[in-house]
Amino acid sequence: PELIAIVHPGASSAPGQFEWLASRGLPWRVIVRPVPINVSAIPNAVYRNRQPQSGCCGERELLQLWAWPLVEYHRVVHLDMDCLVLQPFDELFNRTAEVLYTEDWLMANRNTKVAPAQGGFLLLRPSASTFGALRDLAQEGDWRGGAGWGGSGIGYFFGGPTIQGIVPYFFSHLRPGSAEILERCTYNNMADNPYFKEDDECRDHTPDR
Image (cartoon, rainbow, N blue to C red; front, top):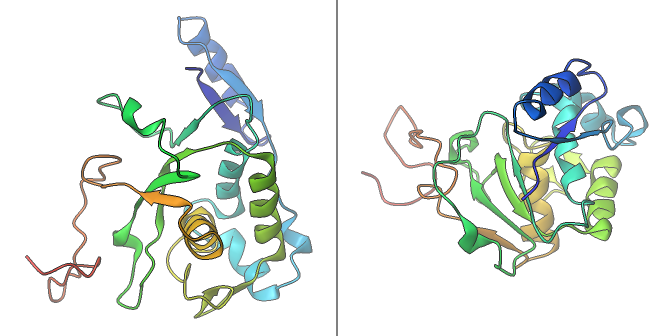
């Protein structure tokens, strides 16, 4: 496996950090990429104004889309830099789904039916055409306040205008059956508590404790 860092041009010190790691026996391939869409050219003003305030990093969360055009690889695992891999997960690499991810019910609200994707762990099959479709979706920006992507109700939650909402909308709604949801207690364990504080109702609609 090859270690790859997708870095925004504004992170000027990042390449040097990865060179330091490489000099100590941990080589990284550094790919410098801009945000894959032009936010100012998004035709939907609601989405255009919401995008820079979405999730942790606004439009820069869409840098994750650059994992899809890495077609020289059989599979790509996209991890946030704060992930800690404790055990191998080789059994996932031959799954047939286009993308495998875990859900982030902590970001959901009581009306959520399709959960957010937890953007810190994506295992995907690279595809230039899928990258183009995802980029076009984000550039068109048909995200509606109160109704999410395409009025589907998907993506009206924290981070919904970015990766957390785009992934479930695209792979579960536009391409139903193309995603596999992994057990989040086994893969990408967040050690969180997915219950509403006021009444202990579980956010993922499973029976209460």
